[in-house]
Length: 151
Image 1: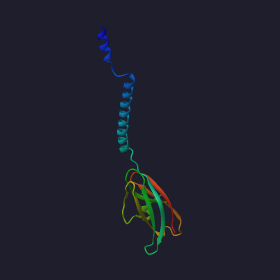
Image 2 (image 1 turned 180 degrees about the horizontal axis):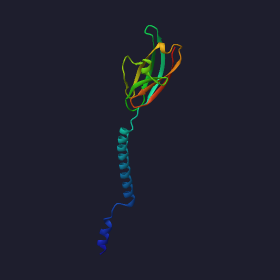
Image 3 (image 1 turned 60 degrees about the horizontal axis):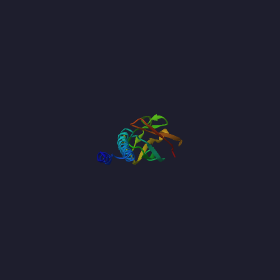
């Protein structure tokens, strides 16, 4: 009888401390895996556009009779952005005979890229060298304003 009791005691399981450590390690591993998986899914649905106008200046071209406004536009967002319209002092560029970058109607700025945008405005519209607000409007419906002095 003593021998059977001794054999039963020799077949013990894993200690409670070791089993707790194993359970915690497995739980942490699963949590990290789920976190990376959810982060990848969330990244696909949270893309955004953000344009920044680094600098802008205007030069008067007396030969062509127009202002040449040059803007350096940087896309710091996570998705490509398309500039679809220009507003001058709140009015659409079509009222001012504005051209964007050599007759291009839409200008696409890739994520992380810098693009030089030229806006051509007829000088007869602004003779006295005022400061105008030029607003770049994107296909996503966002506006990016910049004050420019025509000089």
